[in-house]
Image 1 (cartoon, rainbow, N blue to C red):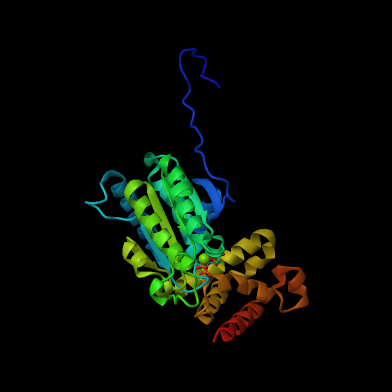
Image 2: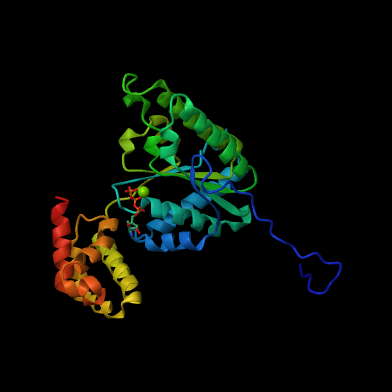
Length: 311
Ligand SMILES: Nc1ncnc2c1ncn2[C@@H]1O[C@H](COP(=O)(O)OP(=O)(O)OP(=O)(O)O)[C@@H](O)[C@H]1O
Ligand SMILES: [Mg+2]
């Protein structure tokens, strides 16, 4: 390692944090932050003006305060819940937020990121899901949290924190109840012992989430269908991305076309909105093979058809 020619000076090296493998049991991702793919996710999510920054700053403030003040006096659990209809950008926002946090408060240390795979946890045979949940919180998450700041994404949190009041013992083995208990106990333990952890949970079904988790959330962020302004930006961004590969598609970036398309697409979520361009391309043989042939009329017709489908 170079020391700039001064034999006595050690060059400071940043030791890479140890991480579990991304496919470790119970996980679907593990990486260090910041991460360019997550920065792109942050930029891709369009929310009403100022909302993203407010969420990021609130998350960062909570992180800083939790790191320095004991739980009994500042009972923040380090849980942010993003709730809203499918396709509104919750998962993308969560990943982007993790990256943003690592950049806003780098002095806390190098951030790590884990993503929980709720389905592998919820689908074990009798007695195993409780064990899997316990193992995940008490070993995998706790060990990663012990060596620096950590963000954990629990996507579709209702699958591991299912409202116990709605679970019938006839239809669900006792293990499902025990697995939910284990998740809540695990979250509590991490909240008290590892103050450098933020859980970001997402859900389409807040009514299916156990009340104990809801009451532990420091911040519940509703992520709604995109507004008129947001729809226009999402369409513009999707067409701009397409035009990077097929430059003639830029002609769809006409103010009048975008205004009409944004107005006509009321009720569409961000995912459908981005995909409507593909539906427009499929409307005639020329644009099927060359998307730069998409006409404004095809775009508007595709939007009208997609909007009708969801009614
Ligand atoms: N508000 C938005 N702004 C920009 N793009 C969006 C928005 N909402 C959704 N998208 C796009 O739609 C796709 C799906 O988003 P994502 O998976 O984050 O949604 P979600 O809310 O987590 O959906 P689900 O509830 O079904 O899991 C992504 O490509 C994302 O960029
Ligand atoms: Mg999602």
